[in-house]
Length: 351
Ligand code: GLY
Image 1: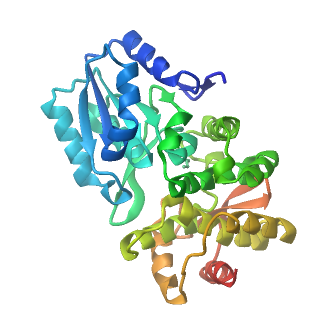
Image 2: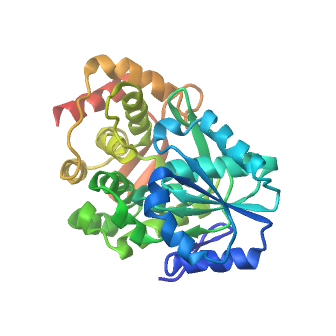
């Protein structure tokens, strides 16, 4: 599996930790930091330590969880960087899932006006999505990724062995983004992924998924056009995720919420962008086969709509959607009325 070349950096798959070691030796950083959470410290750091035996670094540890992807934790990272004497020529290695790669990327891109960082994603979600494409950020007031930058990492090092340390629920969450890459860009990937299911995913499927993400972000790094297709399922999915985060005792994971978004937005795709009924049903079946149903209630609709109104993608006060025209093809900058959005939520409930 040859490295994939992204906008300005390589994405390594094979021997990725040895590649990380080589990268650090060649780059001559004055200081190296590794950002972990308590999970990756236990499950992933030992392999990194083994690969970086002769490299000095300082460790920064944060508490895991999307609820901690906020400015307070970010200040904690900046403070540690300051206390440990980080300079402009320092490197931050983000070792973790989407919270670590997004927030670590944001902290690095703003500290002293920007220090280098690399992504070592350890969850399926961060390997196939968050670590590639240079989106960094934190949440505020339960609005996801509302503060952030577009800053490309210096490299991404993907090691699929880390996935063996994950619970099945985490794999299912990342699986949603793999399905999405098939739905929006590659019918044959969708067929393969549907057959494989979350526990049958292979390195080849993960590699192809990253290739798709990379092709799209290379074409449109700042999300002016094509990159918007990656938001399929995310307008409604993000709203459900934010709502769940502030209301549920055991909140939905990102991919679980996005899967709800896929069903609603596939419905909207059939209404607004020509997705055929048979392909709508095929999409819904693929999602229902993997994700348990979520108790959406009509009385929650206004709250969900309020969250959607704050979405970064909106334009002129209208709620922006990316919708499928067929499985494997997606349009963007499509707008739906409140009634249509409510109808799509009704469709989800009726499933
Ligand atoms: N996660 C969507 C994107 O990177 O654009």
